[in-house]
Length: 323
Length: 168
View 1 (cartoon, rainbow over the protein chains, first blue to last red):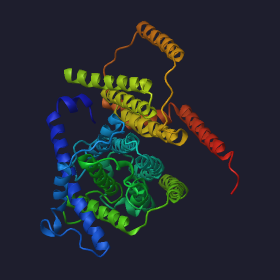
View 2 (view 1 turned 90 degrees about the horizontal axis):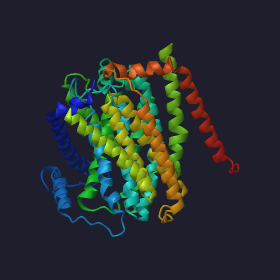
View 3 (view 1 turned 90 degrees about the vertical axis):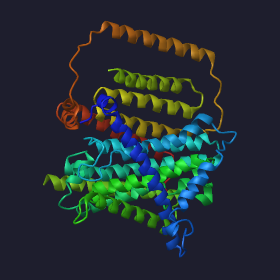
């Protein structure tokens, strides 16, 4: 297990290398996912999507990033400056920590914490503070409304998410992501915990604030919600955070329910990424298929359907395991 | 050793600065974020003391739970755009006296206590399974009592929220 001074004292080159690797992954991944999102949405709406820059329009997002970086960073007059400036960092930083916990293949992990799952849930609850700081610090009614909705939504959907994860922990008697994935060598847990898997995926989609759960940034009602007042690369950081969050939710779903790196023929890491990006495709498919929920529908769906179902599932799991 | 010292002082500075921010600022969201920073610093200290599980719990429960719940409560209760009233002098004086007395008491207490020095507990001592066993065996009664208290709080909240509501 970890001991902290060693991580910072003895292994700092490793920590540095890991951070650089993760940053690189986040950037490339976001570029590709934004391209994919545009292609998927275009295909679903019978359009072509980006075609001009690079083969299949692959370099379109790169050009957009160059444009974003080149743009002036406008800070509106009446914002609460410290909060306004720190908010994108607060949203992004926890995700950086989260990615370092994910095992990609047998033994391919930066550090196998025996409490990785607790750390994961702890850090993923932090970025909501950043979202609220963004909305409140912007001093704009649309931004504030968006932030208020985001907080309400995230609190509500975190509970079914936690309740869906607990049965897996009870089954494997471990909080280490590596051990949980290793325990699924014979069969993935989605076969024995289908309900938990579905609840986790729905709640996870809600946590990323994507359609059909995108009321915090509903364009037709709130302009752009909590990031209305952000421009240039500050807006870009929120975007990076959203796409990284998708990868994290899908990676954890893969590890908890789809057996992680286990699969026939192909090497483990390839299976892992195939599963993760398959789930991401499903998320995109959701976004362009379902209409946005109304606020009261969103709340009652979490509290009246997902939470009771997750509780019943947890109860049944414990009883079955005890028999 | 020096690296350790730097890391510890960093977390102490975070904890104290967050506390000052939580007490000083007149904007309620800054108070809340100050509290969050302070709790983050304390989580760091737990990590430094060799208990990553307690540190993670500190993050999960206090920052992810309590601080977000306070934000939630604030957002439902008061108009956030209104400027808060100026700080009144008598209040400041009494607060200073109160916290000064508390500090004096605390320092006195710390000075009069002899702390046992023990070898640093290994990783095993704070393993999750050890904590779980302790909670469900040795501290069983406390654990159950806490869950009853929480249940009462939930029922109470539901009762208060339902009181003024007419059946639809």
